[in-house]
Amino acid sequence: VCLAQSAAIHCISHHTAQSLVKYFGEAIKPKLFVAHQPIPLAHLTPQFKANAASALRARYEQPSGFGHNYILQVGSIEPKKNHRVMIDAFRILRLDYPDLRLVVIGKPGWLSDELCDYLSSARGEGIEWQRNADYRTLIRYITNASAVAFPSIVEGWGLPPLEAMSLGTPVVVSPIDACMEACGNAAVYMDNPWDAASLANRLIELLSSRERANEMATSGFEQAQQYSLSHFKSAFQSGYEEVLA
Image (tube, rainbow, N blue to C red; front, side, top):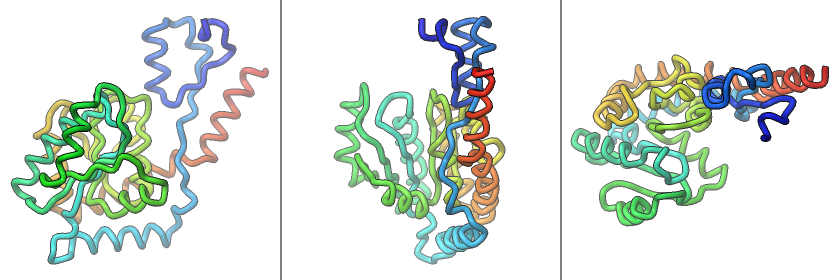
């Protein structure tokens, strides 16, 4: 009823728009407009980029192996975020990087009781679960991570990997349409969302090569800039102007 009665439908991605057409038919297509969900980018100055590149290089050059300190996954604890595949991949990684940690930040969601029980008791296995993190703490975790992993099964848009890109941290993501639209060529992609070995191998690409990590971090800066607040404002305003016209 809402779709039928609306004058326009704002979609946060082309993937979302295509999904609406797929499930509700071509009749709603003229109503759709896309204004991608933006990320704050005021920090993304040339000096910030230089500092982030230096910090990433330092993590990989530390003789203590600090560059391999932890992988970060951000998102509510629920099936679509695919934490189980992340955990399986992490266990593979620990065979080569026994000091590596996995940090998970996210509140308990639906169908997550068993997984939350495990995460609560997994510190001895190198897994740290933060149920809550304020924005300042989240930024600190992202900027100090070796990589951010985003192995989601279903998404409308890939915001966490874009946030990581804007902060100079390389990302490994699921090859689903929403993530591919958001991340373009600036992410390392799993073979498929269910393949823990693929996720582990893609992370090893970054952990084993400072050059590869730096390449993806540099590409990430450029990709993130496409989703500024000004770009969102322009697309959003255009969508409403069409309705009012």
